[in-house]
Length: 276
Ligand code: ATR
Image 1: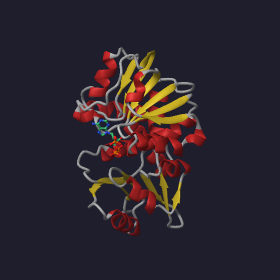
Image 2 (image 1 turned 45 degrees about the horizontal axis):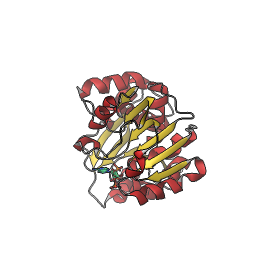
Image 3 (image 1 turned 90 degrees about the vertical axis):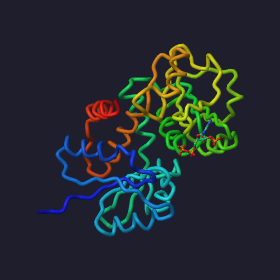
């Protein structure tokens, strides 16, 4: 019997990862025979362990916190969006044995917002909360989708300003502090801080969301996150967590590896049920 093609997600911690469930659902749906597992990698050992995986015939890796930068450095070739994001979440071995690195996080967010939720992005004013790894991955794909402006607000303001500078060529983007948000309104606020789950929300002024404004949390959980509850209190037109983004970024990785695009809707539904 032929050995199944091997895939894995590398991270630390990794127990919480939903990637095996999602990719195995895609494989079943599309009739692809493959093996996918979650693996905890010791800090500082990413390149060594990933090198061994590919040397032993592994076909592709997903990479999660805290190794997206290590994966960026590990890849022999990078997609434009991985280069712009400065981070890689998908590695694939090529026919010549070289390793291709891509970043599917941003396109996953855009697909969830635009295709699944049906929220307009073109011409919209976007506020991104946070200037860490999560925020960095989504800026390029949002600007390429034709949003009218992005403001990045962050506790450490110079991180937001430096991040914005790196994307200036793609469109109107700037960085600021939370205090600078006292005036101004946005059509969409995206929470990319790691504060959401602890309930430590950044200080946001009232009326910062426009009348038909939407709020998207890149985190997900069985119950609405603190950020989603804040937005509902601001009478947001629509509110979502990031479960759809998780499935969409995985679908993009699956497509890179297998050349087949899975139908994400039933998998998002399945994951939603497994959360509750
Ligand atoms: P990730 O890869 O998940 O984005 P990260 O790179 O450590 O993680 O970035 C975390 C982000 O959440 C940062 O923007 C951080 O703000 P600082 O750059 O000022 O540290 C933000 N963050 C974390 N805790 C926060 C809190 N309690 N209030 C506001 N922002 C917070």
